[in-house]
Length: 151
Image: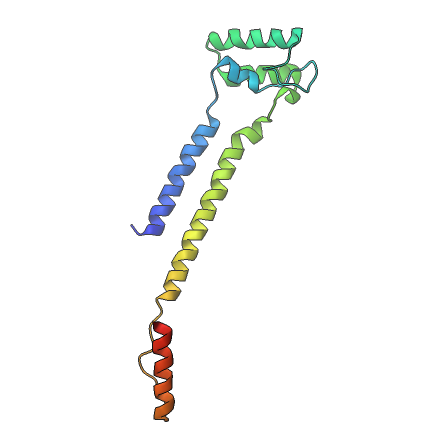
């Protein structure tokens, strides 16, 4: 397999890893707290805000995580109760930004590899070995110029 094929396969493997990693959800309570904004002020994060509602939501999340409830189910419930505004980072951006970044970087790498291959191909052009000129002095001068250029 030539180097461009290996690069494409490597790019594909990296994309799969990044997509899988970006879609995995944290299971710890603290990680869940970081995902939300406190619904009493809509400014501070749930992890650090100190209000009765924020403490109540942290206790609820902690209890549900310890009970083994999936993080996605907890998030959907909180969004249903408080709206999308409760999300510190909207869900579509969070799950697709890593994948989008990987696609962009991978595409850029493939383009760079193709450009490098084309530039090497141009550098390996066939040398001129025969010059048809009627004037021997001009022919000698052309050969010297070509030799100096190749050196």
